[in-house]
Structure formats: structure tokens, C-alpha cells
Length: 367
Ligand code: SF4
Ligand code: SF4
Image (cartoon, rainbow, N blue to C red; front, side, top):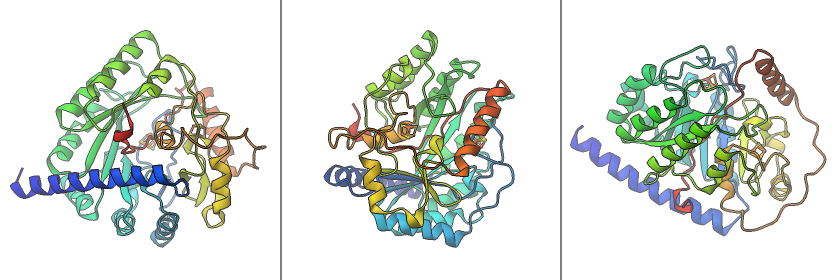
């Protein structure tokens, strides 16, 4: 690696740390802005993981001008972090322009990808666009009929990232029912640390984002990966311990207020697994909606496994108790689609869903 690349990495690392700390300070001082938003520039994916309910094989990219409007809207709300997800975001032809737009507003820019389309040149382009955080989820060591997001297939991409990326890279592995060999998660985490990345582990949830307890060996592996991440930005806290044991957590889900999920159709949802609630177009989503959701308890919270929303909630769990859920709003078609996708997976005997977790740089708040 050249000296110039090393220097750029160091400068960008320090700048990210500064922005992370500023984001946390703002989040603690005020509750009136979203901390994290997920945006979906394209629902299509180049893979078809059997557990996934967040992709299709045909939809077109959201026009770039419309993505700009959504990014501008998030900036106008004072949003701290925008994570681009999908589908596979690298399939959007003007992804870099969207990243640039996020950065122009001073927001933190992240992306979740399956990594298949990364090349040395593409990584350098993402550096230049200003990407700050990237996450790849790796499901197994060898590809199988459930997932092709495998260490064997992606190791070359990881080496390219280790060599070229000037942004933070986190590798997420998975545990839970439907994962054939839990030892794979350990192998993925070890490889991530070896290459200088951070490592997290997600637990496969059901089609409503709810918990499925881990077996004894899986719990051991879960703790081992947590220990490996101790010194990294992605370490876990007692919240994840409870999840691994199948125990409920007491927390206040602030989805719809501090966390926003904006789908490809421009509708605001609680999260990827509760699409359809509230399902309001972003152009009509007001400060009153956000305030209502800030104070509304979500019935799915105790057994929720969506860790990015839980991490955002750390900023507010100590304040502002929530009231009981309001009567459900009329779900939009997207909710029915999510649920029927889940039912189809279950009927086909496929494993349950896994959220495309976002990396949230809240390391200072954890442990
Ligand atoms: S999990 Fe990711 S890579 Fe797999 S089908 Fe879903 S969006 Fe595509
Ligand atoms: S608790 Fe919040 S993040 Fe978790 S599934 Fe429910 S709405 Fe989504």
C-alpha cells in the first residue's frame, strides 16, 4: 500500500470518528431529528438468497433525481446517517452521485452490499464518492442452495477491500435456524478481523423481525464473536446477549422517528420487516408523524432482532416513556407483499428472514 493511501486512510478515519462523536452528541442533546435512515435506490438484486424478503429480480432503479429529493428531505430533517441498502445498491447506475449528495449535506454515508460487483476500480470510485461505511453480510463458508454469499466466493472481494478501501468495512455473519453450520460464522468473523475489518453477527429472525433462540453451540459462537469484536467499533452489549438466549429486551423502539426506512416507492416504514407501517409517502411525513412514533410503543419490540434500530434507541432509552401502540394504521400493499413473501418462504420450508442490518457507528455508547 502506498504512503499516500495510508495517509488518506488515517485522515478519513479521524474524520469519521469526529463525525461519529458529533452524531452521538447531537442525538443525546435533541430528539427532534432522525439519527439513521435507510434508503432503497433499487429493489432488484443479482442474488436470490432463500431467506430474503427484501429483493426482487426485475424492478428498475429509482430515478436519480428522485433519490436526490429523498436525500435532500432527510437532510432537511437533520438526519445524521444515511445507509443505502436494497436489493443490491451497486446495481444502481448512479449510486456514486447519491453517495456524493449525502456527503454534500454533511451526513454520514453508509452502504450494505452483497459485494459481488466490487472490483478494485469500483472500490476506488466509492472512495472518491465519499462512502464512509460499508457492510457485507457473509452467510456461510461454501455456497449452498440457501445463500451464495459465501466466504469462498467473496474472499477475493474482501482482499480487494483490504487493499483499496478508504472507508470502514464491517463483515456481518449470521447464526440461527436455517444456518446449516454455525461454525461458519466463526470462520467469517476470524477472516474479517484478520483482514483488518470489524465483525458483527446477526441472528436470523422470523418474517416479522422477531427472535428465534439460538442453540447451546450457537450461543457459544455468538459470545466468541462478541469477544473478537471487543476492541472494534462493532462490539456488542448485553442487549445482544439477551437475544442470543432468546430472552426479551426492554427497550423503546423509536422507528418512525429516530430511525426511518424509506422504500423504493418513497414510503416511510418502521423498518425492513414492518413495511406497511405506517407506509406514508415521505412528502407527507411530517414532524407530527415523527413525534407520534417517537412516543408509540411497538408490540414487536421485546423480541426484535433488528440491531441497528436498537442501537439508535440507546440514545433515547433513558428518556421519554412510550404509550401503548395506537390502533394499526391501514397497511399499504408493501406490507402484504412482505408478509406473503414470508408465507411463501415458510411454505417452501426455507429458513426465516434476516434483516439487512445497518452498521451504526455508536461504539462510544456500547460497553
Ligand atoms: S440477502 Fe441481500 S444478496 Fe441476498 S437476495 Fe436479499 S438483498 Fe440480495
Ligand atoms: S421493534 Fe421496531 S425495529 Fe423491531 S421489528 Fe418492530 S418496528 Fe421494526
